[in-house]
Length: 108
Image (cartoon, rainbow, N blue to C red; front, side, top):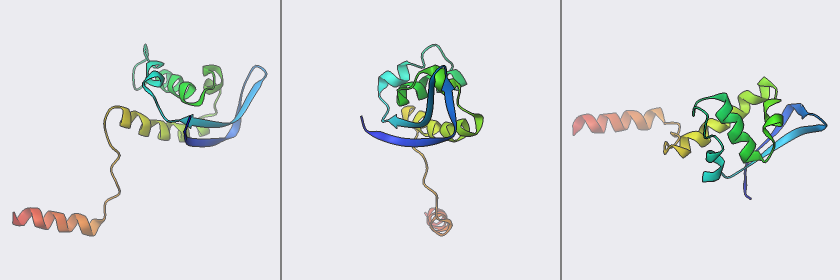
């Protein structure tokens, strides 16, 4: 599967005998979002389920991720959720271009 996001954990996550230092996320499929069924869409539980599905790592490992790493991962995850719900991220606007567009709109 195509990797769309890679992240090296600042603090390795361990569950039992297994330790993970890096996560690789594949391009989301509908089945990945199905793993969040039963969780509120904006809950940590839904995010853990989605990260588990996208990375192929068990939820026990994902639950062991340090909060500093989780904050970075959650930013990327928000982009995935927005795309799933049909919201496209906005591009940074050029203040000059915005001012020009507003002047043009006023003249119309």
